[in-house]
Amino acid sequence: QTTWVESGGDSVQTGGSLRLSCAASGRTWDTVCKGWFRQAPGKERESVALIDTSHDTTYYADSVKERFTVTLDNVKNTMFLQMDSLQPEATAMYYCAAGPTYDGLCSRDHWEYREWGQGAQVTVSS
Image (cartoon, rainbow, N blue to C red; front, side, top):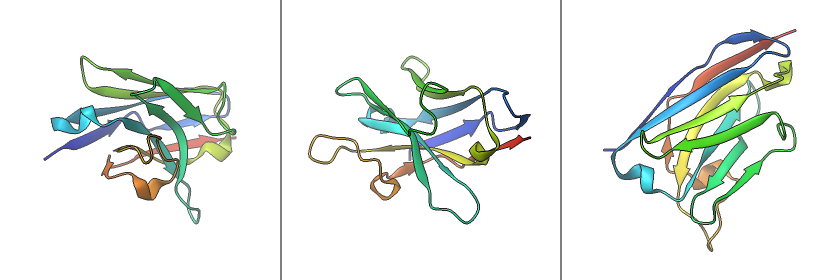
């Protein structure tokens, strides 16, 4: 059984930074598509930052570009999301996820991802 364990969620003020971690165990680390999604109350889960490890490419939602960075530690089987210049609209539950490619590409849709972390709450106050 593969698992993803998240940590790093917290409450910060506008302009602050946080780093989320997601440690994987089992064979799931070999999955090509890895990334972070978030879900705010009353809203649909949305992709935030994704890594395609077969093409070594990344995707960032427009709302987080140049402020969020997704990285991998392939020795520790851990994925990170560095979040800088946080704004109140970033308040959400953040989930790490892994999934296969479809037609050779990583999907931005949450329903295509099979492995999920338990979630980490990020709250940004003004």
